[in-house]
Image (cartoon, rainbow, N blue to C red):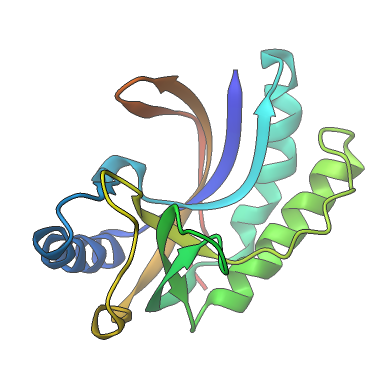
Length: 182
């Protein structure tokens, strides 16, 4: 099974994102917009994983829930990859972005310490929520549409299974760990 670990936004943050997405969908109808159910911040992508590793993965993720709730402010839209033809439009975080990055770093260390993931990735982690993918046209967003002001909390850490279909990815929750209130 294909597995990844992510943060799920709370209702307030999710509603703010969805309102902004509705405005952007009207202006950029040719993009492939991510469904409400698939909005998340990926902390770690494990890829193809034997289901027998799931209990160990849960044990590495569970302590992260005690890190506390993360207040996050989506402040800008950006495209990925940077410097090349963009394939993805994503919401980046100002406030809370450092806490999300720290959580991802702890998770990667825990996964490596438990032999679930190699400790070789030097790729810089950029906390974001993918909002759209390239569709029938190039993914270009006008400068005026890049600024955002969306605030809310990350409510839980979730272990997901991702199944790929011609219509897109379908995510199933394998385990959910609510973030503790501070």
